[in-house]
Amino acid sequence: LFNWSDKCVSKSVTVIFCFSFLSTVFICSFMVAAPIFGYLGDRFNRKVILSCGIFFWSIVTLLSSFISKEYFWLFVLSRGLVGIGESSYSSISPTIIGDLFTSNTRTMMLSVFYLAIPLGSGLGYILGSSAKEAAGDWHWALRVSPILGITAGFLILLFVPDPKRGSADQLGGRIRSRTSWLCDMKALAKNRSYVFSSLASAAVSFATGAFGIWIPGYLFRARVVQKTAEACTKEICSSTDSMVFGAITCVTGLLGVVIGALTTRLCRQKTERADPLVCAVSMLGSAIFICLIFVVAKKSIIGAYVCIFIGETLLFLNWAITADILMFVVIPTRRATAVAFQSFTSHLLGDAGSPYLIGLISDALQQKYTTSALWRFLSLGYALMLCPFIIVLGGMFFLATALYFLDDKDKAEAQLLPATAYPTHTFIFSLLQTHEQVIALKGKNTLILLQASYFLLTTFFLFFLSRRLTPLVPAF
Image (tube, rainbow, N blue to C red; front, top):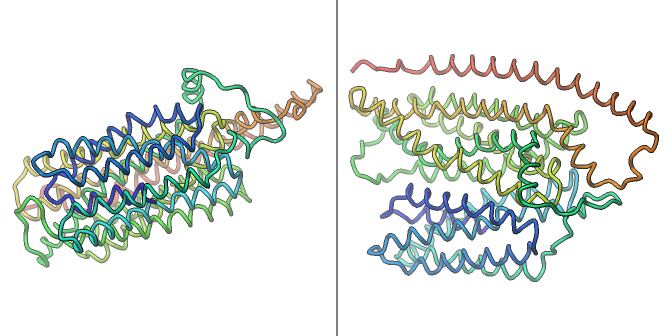
C-alpha cells in the first residue's frame, strides 16, 4: 500500500520537475535492482530483506524532501535509490504469500495484496495534494509517506512470519535442494508458461504506462476540439482530466482485482486452465473498449470515460492471476527470482519505453502534416491506437500460456511430491502418462484453434474500428 502511495505522492507534487524523466530513472533503477533482490530472496531471510528495503526507500524519500531545486540532479538520484528500495518489496512479498497459502486461498490473498496498488495510488494522490495544501509547500508531501513506511517496516519485522519455502505446497515430500542462479535461470527460460505470462504482463505494462502519461492530455485535447476548453500553450497545463483519470484508475484497479479473483475461482470448477484463459478473454475485451475510446472521444468525453472505465477494469483483471500462474508453475526456491525477472521484463518491454514511443509517433505525425488543435488531438489518438494491438498480442501470450500451463504445473508439483506418490509399477505408470498426454493433446488442439480465431477476429475488429476514425490526413 505505502509502496504505491509513495510513487503517486511524487506524481501529485512534481509540478516544477520533468516527471517523465523522474519516472524513467525510477523504472531503470527498479529493473536493475530487481534481479539482485530476486537472487537474495531465494537464499536468505526474506523478512529481513523486505524490512531493510522498506526502511531504505522511506529514509531516502524523507531526505529527498529537503533537496532544493538548485540540486535537481540530487533529487533525480534519490528517485533512483527509491526504485532500488522498492524493488526489494515487489520481488519478495508475493513469494511470502505463496508460501503461506495455496490454491483458491492463495488467489484470494494475492488479490488482497494487489488491491494495494490502486488503493496506494489513490492514497498517494490524496496525501500528496493534502499535505501540499496544508503546509503550502510540496516538500511536506514527501515527509508523510516515509513515516507510514517505517511503521510498516517495523510491523513486518515483529508480526510477519518468514515461512519455509514451499511449506504450503509440500504434500509430505521435500523440495529439491537449492540450485545455482545459472541453473535457476535456465529452468525459468525453459518454463514456457512463465515466459509467455511474463510477455503478456509486459503487454499490460506497455498499455498502462502509455495511458498514465498520455490519456489525460488526450482528453484535454478532445475538450479543445469540442471547444469546451481553451488551448494551452504552456509546458504544464491545468486540467481536471488527470484527477478524474487517476480516480478511475484506482476504482477500476479495485474492481478488476476482485472480479478477476472471483471469476477465476468459478472457472476453475470447469477447467484447470482457468487462470490463463480468464486473462486472455479479459485482454480481448479490454482491447475492444480501449479502441472505442479513440472513436468516441471526439464527440463525447463522458463516453470516452465510460470506455476507459470498462477497458481498464478488464485490463486489471489479470494482476493477481498472473502472480498466481507464476506460483503454480515455478517451484518455491525459484519464485523470488521469477518474480524479479517478470518485473524486469514487464518494465523493460512495457512502461519503460511505451510513453516515449507514443510521444515519438505522435510528434512524427504532427511534423509530417499541418499543425492545428484538431490534428494534435488526432495524431495522439493514432499513436495511442498502438496500445490495443499490443493488448491483443498480450492476450495471445496468455492463450499460449494456457497451452503449456498444465504441463508446467505438473512438472513443478512433481518436485514437491514424496517418492511414494509415484506408481511403483513402471508399466502402469507409462499407461497413465500416455492417457494424460492424449487428453492434453486434445486440449492443446482446441486451444490452438481458439488462439487462431481469437487473433483473426480481434485484429479484424480493431482494424474495422480504426477505419471508423477520422481519415489519417484531415482536410484543413
